[in-house]
Amino acid sequence: MLDRAKGLLRPSSRSAVPPFIVMDVMAAAARLEAQGRRIVHMEVGQPAAAAPSSAIAAARAALSSGPLGYTETLGIPSLRRRIARWYRDWHELDVDPQRIVVTTGSSGGFVLAFLAAFEAGDRVAIAVPGYPPYRHILTALGCEAVGIECTVQSGWAMGVEALLREHRRRPLKGVIIASPANPTGTMMSAEALADLIRCAEDAGITVISDEIYHGLDYAHPALSAARISPDAVIVNSFSKYFCMTGWRIGWLVVPPALVRAVERLQQNLAISVPTLSQIAAEAAFDGREELEEIKRGYQDNRRVLLEGLPRAGLGSYLPPDGAFYLYADVSRFSTDSLAFASRMLEEAGVAVTPGIDFDPLHGKNFIRLCYAGSQADMAEAVARIGAWLKG
Ligand SMILES: Cc1ncc(COP(=O)(O)O)c(C=O)c1O
Image 1 (tube, rainbow, N blue to C red):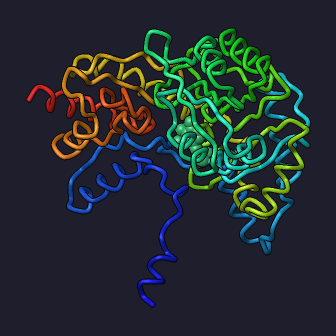
Image 2 (tube, rainbow, N blue to C red; image 1 turned 90 degrees about the vertical axis):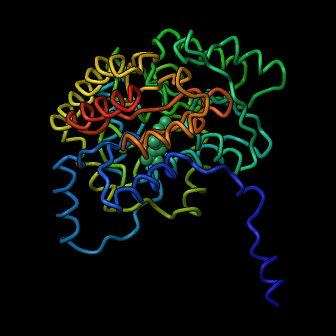
């Protein structure tokens, strides 16, 4: 009986996706902190700041004003309209609120977008290095994630030629793009991004644009793929610019032909997105001043790292254009970034993410540092890393 139960409880093969290593680093850092060690956190990509006060006030008011029931599956209509207004204000673009779908973070948005746009077996291109869950979610859904290698020489951007070469080799159904990108923090120029989107679509490749770091652009304003094509699927989130990671709320802009499919999927997968988070998210748009102040803090942190890291011995990286990441080549010290990051955590008390999380091949030479913490943390990290590398 026991043996039979064991057999029944075996995990499915499609659930055998690799771990998201950054979460393992976070757990190791927490273990050291529980022993009384002081750790500077530069591993997880999340703002140290709380949600804007307008969002918190709206949530408080909602909690005391009555029951929080389900909402419409596609999201509270006033929130969908408010998101559409954001496209008008920020991107000078009219987006029909009917095309906007509120989701449980962009993570929930990916599942809906991939299920609605792709069949099992479809090949979908992703940039390498890139955000690991793209590959892992696609794999769990039965799609094939096809890595397109990006290089420091091309600013870590996905090249049109490399994408089309892969498409000629075996047809691709989709491509995921992100600018600013994680883990590199680099951005594509508006012209390069527009060119990539147009060439992909001309070749029949559906574009999924992850715009979660929009708003956190320092080099030049980020261009939404929605400006280039009504057929691109846009994924966005309140997690980063809006400082609402734990509220688990984001949104999609989907082509009209996919709206009903996404609605049916979300009806069955989630019914609706947490109501409290939707109410808070709508009010978060009124927190612009606070959010811009936080963004200025990231820019100051970026400056502290760009000035301090080369002196500390870590000088090999492209200056990030956006988001809050810096992707440093550490091959001078180690070609095993997992071991290097573990030692940095143990010996210097600085938690960073090994590059193998983002690039199974060359990531062994890189680490990612997140600079969304305080300026004091950044200065402390630079001092600790410097003393460690020299010691
Ligand atoms: C590039 C990118 N996309 C998506 C996400 C998922 O974020 P969320 O589900 O909180 O919106 C992250 C989180 O770090 C990310 O870096």
